[in-house]
Length: 166
Image (tube, rainbow, N blue to C red):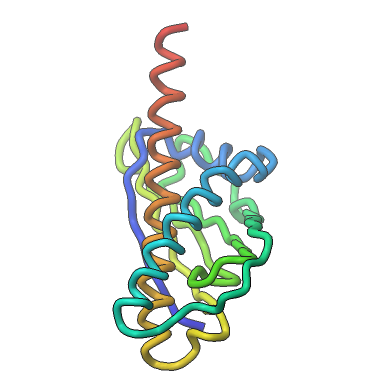
């Protein structure tokens, strides 16, 4: 398993972000995960071709799923951070990990902002298990996770704008 770490800042209170990521069914995240995996796979495939590696020709149905477990403590106004273990599975992508097993570390930056760090170990696709392939797999995983966090950040910002107009 190869490690990765990706960071972002979200305009959301720690308590609200923790609630969103754990208490609601995780299926609400799947469109963001699919978009991120598709964009990551596109970049990973381009990188593989650039260094002379050709992805497998087979096309399989593409699926994503994430299971986020709750923090092991109550998150409230006095809480400075929360750690949420997760497992992110994908199927059918050429260069995106089959599994990212990790944790989301949420840290209160101020009353309205929370930093989120996603760190974990990935299982690369079988055809990327050599040295050159591991570079492709790590870059693709980092790009995929960064795209997911970008989508999550945009969705939360939009929810905040909508709440202000109501």
